[in-house]
Length: 455
Image (tube, rainbow, N blue to C red):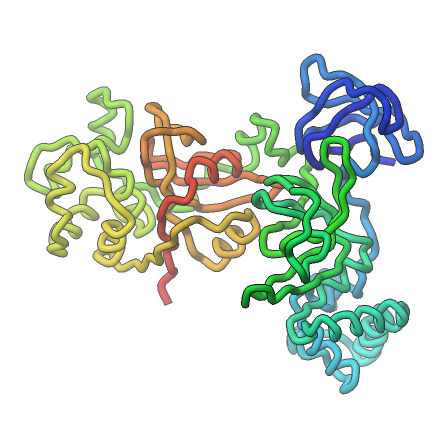
């Protein structure tokens, strides 16, 4: 058994290894604990990184543990040089596609031709046999799973992720917002508990679909433990994300990790380098974005609300003053009034016109996607996001920041039920790192823009 674990949710720590023992304390969700003793279903634990934390007992169901390295459900793909490329059956492969291949045989259509061609005939034959064995070796369960999906009328929408998770013995996921846990998702009316935002649950791999009220929704079968109660039921699949057990180097609860998770010595984007920025610092202004816009507007005005304009300048790889001048030349009706008022900020619609003037395209969103992985996938496609958030008077992003501000979201590292974000912050014209949960709380549901890369 591992020497460390983390709590799935707020849990009651007890004086003995039984549910009737007295409660000593309640410790928060995602709290690291040191395992002191294994008592067959219960553990004696000591909360880590809590001053004067009380040692006590927790049931195994209340904890999540570091993942144990297992053989993959489907064989790994490797190049001729032995470089691993990932699983031979990606989780996104549709079940219907897989079933058709089981009948037809030959090269699996989801494997790239260039990868397939690197394998010898013997290696191709061996790979095919191993992929087949991953299902035929569990024939009764495979047949039951296929039958269940047919009964639930969802054969056409199933992906191989579900089979993989089932064969793995389940997967840790967490709720991205509060919601009920249902006894029967097909009726969608009987519930006996609620999973709170951040709650870690064990998804068994089973999925059911409800068409209630004309809305087709998928539900995951989950197990979890909260406070003093074990729960088993069905939770909406569209509001969960994979829980990635955090390493000590990436743990979002360790503030010092913000200094090391990204290498800020290598900027992702080019920051504005106008002489006006250096002049502003020499004059004693406490923000790099407080610049005299005279070269752009012909008026000596030190503007205090240029965060959006700095974001666009950075995304377009230009300095701030040429960016402002181009905006004024575009004849957008609000550009002059914004720049003539040193305290006038920009809306997302304003920024779209500035992006267009600088050869970029922005796509409005009403709220930023709510899981680190969704954001990571979009960033990986070459996009960036201009995000509205709250800051304090020193320019730091805060969950309760009352000053509205624009930053550029550049990178993200998912970890646990949170993660780390890397942003360009115009306030000091530099890149900064924040806890994902803090950042999302700060951005709330405010409007922003995804920046689409040039074709």
